[in-house]
Image 1 (cartoon, rainbow, N blue to C red):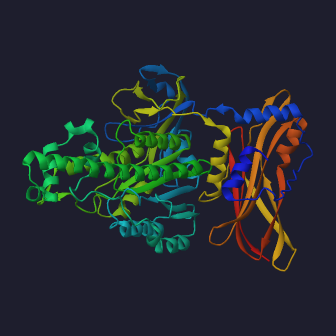
Image 2 (image 1 turned 90 degrees about the vertical axis):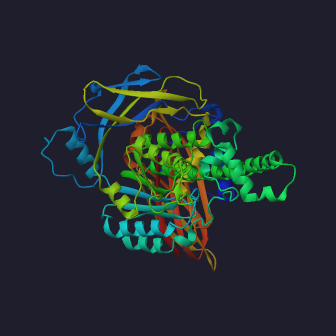
Image 3 (image 1 turned 180 degrees about the horizontal axis):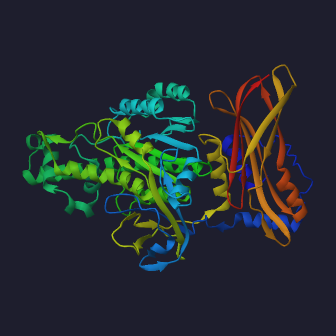
Length: 576
């Protein structure tokens, strides 16, 4: 087995001794020579760049009255990267909003009409995400859940697919169009959430922004240092308990303050990292689904100060969303309660903290064509506004200039040749920080697919099975997978068509515990006639597992290497 296959087997605890019978439909598979195998093994170890060779920009254009302008062409735009004019490679007008086209007097061939019809023909996939990591309090979790219930009851349409997940990963409700199933899941979701909010200092009580600055000597000038030290002295009661004069107890207070601030900052950064990681993994899987995809994050915000790991993670999340056609939306829950009062006065420090933490929520929505909803005491209205609104935006891309993978930030500037229009777009991007091995990317993709909230549709698949009894409580179960590969790209090289296709099949019990599974990677080097037969008739394989009596969830995943396209299928099986 390939190195990646062994890694996946270890990840899921699959014994290498298990047998996999992979029977391809055609007899077109060319055996590799020893030299070919050595060359393939060497290539699998090479470091290659993840295909991040273009910059994608979503841009909305409105007139003086706030109406969307939808008749622009690529010639109306100029795009600059660090001040240098770039050639626009791709350009399109897209629409996001209700599934049915709105009434319009537009000509049938207008860009606006075409965008509306494309949007109407796609199913809507809506991911509802609860931030149960960086929240300052769990008191609003019930309100979030009630808002989601209201959305499912009142707004969910027959063609909608809805998934629910939490930042901690403790909640993973797969995409479903079954309202009652979703309502049943939401009914029990509260006890599954992470109910331990971020630990924050109580002496002195600090906002996350204050803690971030107080822990870093470079930011002393940005806080009222003397006031914060005095708050520490008061809450610790140092004036009454220490001798040595004012300077002595203030030095002690400052030492304690830095320790408390560093701890709070460390915990907040760790939880923010985990939240963004969960969102990134969800976006990774969503890119292989077909449909109008939107993510709605409920949160009171998090910090992503400039040049921090969180800032890079957030931009990486935005980049991945743009490349995958995913719109990020966010609902701030800070309108539900009034926080940060000192003696009945809402301080400037509290307001600065709120703005700093809501900033990343707004940025993620703004740069992907989504919506940031805040200052609401009814969260359902926030979801309603997001899923009902009709937005038109331009997607354009340009080739990224050659640069080192150093995580550096680069500025984007868009200009319009038509006057008196308002233009909104992302203002910059980070290049990737490192090069990734192909095998590691492949492992991540397949593991994500096994944990994905639904079936991926880039490679259409079917799964069937039959079984025979081998012992009193053990059955030999044969699973037949069929993959339609007509949409896959087989590279032409030396008069042969080349690609590598990987298949993994896993069995989980009713509590989603892994039971058994197998995997295989096959490298194709086909003559044109053989390739035509494989393309027309598809790929069929048989996998046999030994399973005891019981009920199982079977998931099969297929991945091709040239473009990283994936397909998956899930089936419930009862043996016998």
